Image 1: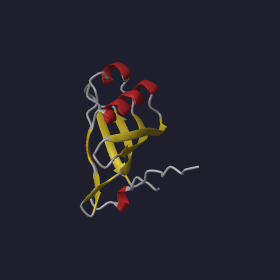
Image 2: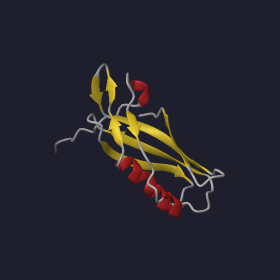
Image 3: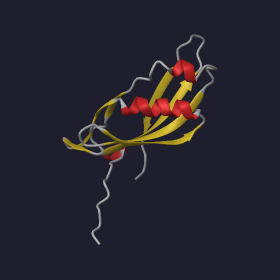
Length: 119
C-alpha cells in the first residue's frame, strides 16, 4: 500500500507573510437576515500556494444555515494572496471569526477577523 502524503497548511504564526483576502458579502443578505439580529460563527479557510481556496469549514456558529451558505459562497468567490515563508508561497490556513451586527440602518457589518490556529 502506498501512503498518500497529507498536505500541510501552515498556521498564521508560522508564516513570515500572512495571506490576504478580499471578501464581499452578496447583496442577498437582506433576504436571509431580515430581522437584523446579531450573529457570529467561526470559519477555517485553507488556501493553496497559488492563492486559491482549497476548502472551507464552518465551526461554532449561531447563524442560520442559509446564512452560513452565503458566507461560504463569499469566501469561495474571494481573491486571496497566498501566505509566504521566507519569500516562498506556501499553503496556509486561517481561522476567522465572522460577526454580523445589527445597526440602525439597513447595512450589516461583516467582519472576518483572523486568529492564530493550531496544527
